[in-house]
Image 1 (cartoon, helix red, strand yellow):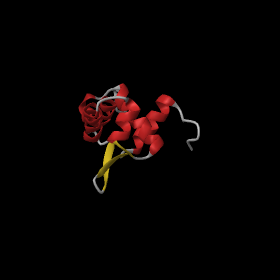
Image 2 (image 1 turned 90 degrees about the horizontal axis):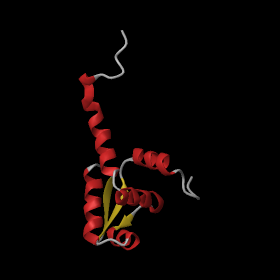
Image 3 (image 1 turned 180 degrees about the vertical axis):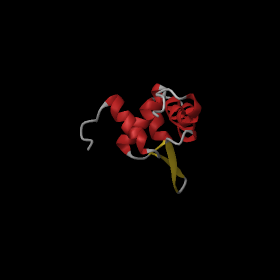
Length: 104
């Protein structure tokens, strides 16, 4: 017997993907993720300069991305760098925006 296409008995399987999409559903966060795809790792100060936003605002967006498991941190001395932590995100961003010139 085939399982129905819309099976409400297993909605939990959609929680994590929905949370990822919610975390990405802000223009600043999309920009941060796209920038991290290009630079590979970046600190808050650099992002703040590029985005022309207060550091506290950038940090709040990074915290949402970090909570969703989209970005992770790497420490180098006193500097904290952000990197993409989930390869699926690169696929989503590429689908939304296409590949940048020079990307493989």
